[in-house]
Amino acid sequence: MKSNILFFLLIFGLSFSQQKNVIIKSLLPNTENFAFPMVSYSQNPVIENKINTFLQVDQLEHVPGAEGSPSKLVSTGKTSYSNYVYFYSWEKMEAPKNILSIMIDGEASGAYPEDFSICKNFDLRTGNLINPQDLFQPNSIKIIENLIQKSVKKEISDFLTQLKSEKNPSQEVLDQISIYEHCFTDFTLDGVEYYFAQDKIRFIIGRCANHAMRQLDELDYYVVEFPYKELDKHWSVYAKNLLSGSEKVDKTSFSHKLYKGKIDGKYPITVLIDKVYDDGSFSAKYWYDKSKKLIEWHGKLDGNHLSLIESDYYSEETHMWIFKALIEADLQGNKILGTWQDYKTKKYLKLELEEL
Image (cartoon, rainbow, N blue to C red; front, side, top):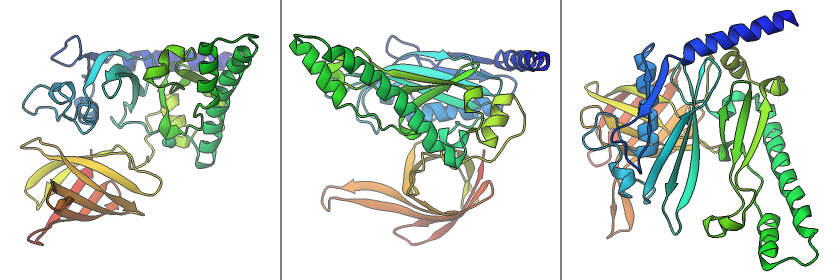
């Protein structure tokens, strides 16, 4: 018991020491509708750069250092979301030593304005985004998903019991019953937000009602939390080292990685991999380091082989995307090696990338 207390105090002290070196300020311009985090990590500028690059490219579709305001595309509805997106606040969560957890709150406009909370978790040893699937053993992922679903379903069931106990329910209560009886609850790890607290992990699950019916949704978002110790038998080796404060870095999945390299040996580029789906399909954003303008790739990962298409523009005449290039490459350790082929000229250029 005494040794466990000493171990906890040691880890807590290490966590505090590590976290105090991570400072977050608001990215300029900081306005009423744009409060976005910018990370400063003097202990490791490379990791600082990786985290800021990921956040800005992923959420703002802006490459750090590019011309113009970082908020321009999201605040004018010109990102790939085709909606106006406002970021109202951010918060640095109190996480273990090796982890930076950031909560970002905002609102996206569509048919109705819809508020959102985004949680981004980074491994401070590498600067990589932490993918939830990397945290658990393969045969435990479904178990964790079931535990989350069970907790949400119980909360809904208990509230439905309360609503249905009313003898003369109003129309409002009847509408609430309808909302919760038809609520989608089969969430997977890919479909929930999560963040690390000091001694537990918290999952945030979307509410049952859309914006139009939100005033009736008393339960709102669901928060399901598990103490780290409760998930001991489900954590992957990577997660155990991550949470214990170990400096040992384990291999993680391809999703959300940053790569840097060259096309034809002379054109420096940076690539951000998006989420890889179960069928291997994924997209990526890349930019020439000189121009810093985002270009998209779409394709598939089959084993260690990547087949991607770079589109040029959409033809209103043919109602088809016109291709710019075809990419065929292989994952070899921490590198991507292959070719970038100009679709018109059929000329092959060498593609060489290395994980940042």
